[in-house]
Image (cartoon, rainbow, N blue to C red):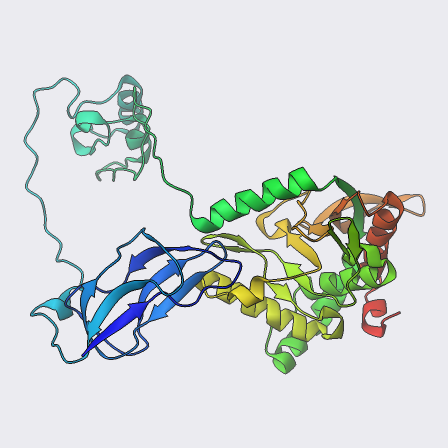
Length: 396
């Protein structure tokens, strides 16, 4: 019996998608619910499970093709048997040692560039012992730098050899193209302004050091810093509701709920899953949700629903070592908080220079609806809450 494999129903906001990579070949056996192919939209990668046990007898649409909801992409025969040898299709091929390459009479073949030869001479490495990655087997400067005495240097995957300027052109993924589109939309449609402040992270670091082990034991998740930042942001949004609003035509939409987007890096690019009703969650609940999203982003399993909505966002460039940045608003939101690496810095307290763990905060906002007063005071509210974390726990 032939079973059709179709593109799953996409969301209303997604008109088309791209077939990324078939995990099975024609003639191979498949099991029910086994992922056959990844389908990429401009937001997420969807898995397409096999609807039944059988053999994948026909792939109708191949890798890279554009599809829409309900498109027929393959057929499974539930009564067929896998082709002979198909069960071994995914086993790695045995390594084969290639025969020694014949020496070329070309002057470039196997010879070293002047700069490479100098490095090899200094290292005491014979030119003949180095495998060249340049044109015609020429030993480049990069090969010489990687070479070690007594061993042949492995050729780097991508090398700019002497006299060569290689380029590679690859199409944007749907997610990357969507990110580019939204960033331009934000830049062109919002009057973006950024205000800055600094926060002494000492109190939170002391609190975390004292309770992190007990916290993890009780709640099953690490006590990080993002839970405090989310709570501090919610405190500011409650005090200045315009920071939690959005623009719809000539209207300002005030949201009576607090759905906080957390920017998360993934192998495919930046995604912003939403922590819904963050004001009703404990720090433990927030940390659990962030950990969950981090794992899903790594595996490419964040759903469309988890990326939809949001009234305010937080971007943490500090995990990559960023000192300061001006985050771009995630439309249709009107503000975003950027947090950065915490570093010991000299500050003045009571006329004395002291060393404190300082984090620079940056909040970008849409100046069309948010005045400087609300933006600055909102960021000050976050700063004060972070420097006195008891206020976050007591909601005062």
